[in-house]
Image: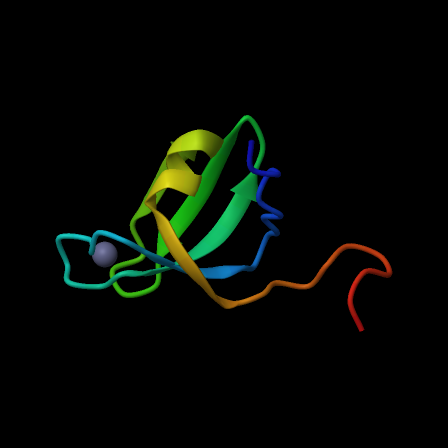
Length: 72
Ligand SMILES: [Zn+2]
């Protein structure tokens, strides 16, 4: 089993399949039961279940700020 992905608000991610607008880079805007991501080009917002998000995500482009004292 894979460990759960460490998803943070503000993360910029590249998805495997481009959005109809041609962009494949999204910003994580909400973390909860579902992951909310916003297309950085057309600003459309999409909610995905965590499983779906992990399946569709290709890579992190840029990491959001970790809460408290992680990183740095
Ligand atoms: Zn778009």
